[in-house]
Image (tube, rainbow, N blue to C red; front, side, top):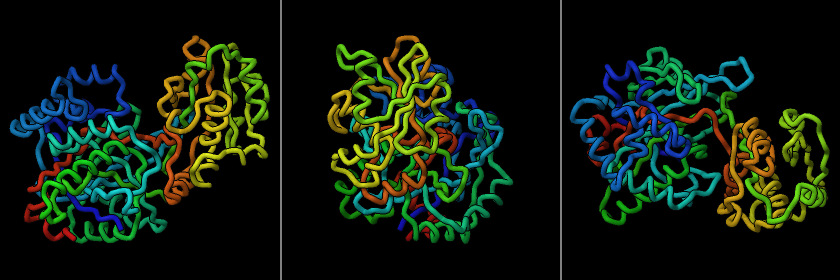
Length: 439
């Protein structure tokens, strides 16, 4: 189903690549204001292309890109390839080192209705428009979105393992503590085998919905302007990092809900009383035990109200039938759907998914201790602690054709910007070396 193509990657030159940590950056939607300001101080950091500044930010990115290409800061590989990308990481509190194995390539930018690339969350139009404008001006992609394919036979991993033995470069440690390693496969027969394997697969978009939809919007605009296009022009494709969802190195971390405010006049006592209509509310002594107390238990949450007030919440099974949102059974079964419906809608009166997405009273926080600290410091009224979504749940929701509540998944670690760049200019796929890989 999924058509993939090799690419002639753009990369920092050999001298700069020796210190690649100085030039990579977090993705545009996770980089903090403090991180941005620190990265901007390096005139060659990839942040200048991925999150450009100025009144005409996209124009500034194009100017800088052209300058870097002409000066040899960025150089393009002579041969097309598929780029092996490994991320070595540890989870907090664990000594085990994981290795997420994957590869970067071009994938055709499929419309959602084609049912080849599947999504699991909605996007914000402003962020999509921002990415589409930047892509239209530069025709350059600074970071790969993350897609998942399933292959229980792990056929492609042996080629990746062989390639990674001779890396192009690697980070010492990126901003999230992972070690990133890049290698390239340029054997035409192997590349064609990658294409054959993916041609029989759907792809679930794990991370990068806004960047992917930006590519869709740009492709649609170009198609409308060029009705005689062949379908093989570079703007038909999108840079993606593909990993095997059958592997045990795929990690999804929980994202907790921090209530910055409660409806006017609602006390903690009244909040608990309202919650008891739908949940078993069990006081607990140590708030730091909450993640362990809810782990593996469906429709269970932790609640922290400050000053040591911690509770375990468990939905009363008989009330689940009240969940009447117009969505699939697979979405209704999710912990986070239960939380958003019974807490945000029924208890707090924020009615419906659209209103909840726009409500400024909720923050999404991945760091559990930060949740407790912000409540204790008076920055929030309550913290609802959640468990992680499983890969099985992600797949079931995607195949049901529905989407999850906002901020349901946090695939860890994130890919990084500036590790490999991709051009989608028309002449990129008209290069003689590319012809044998075209469908």
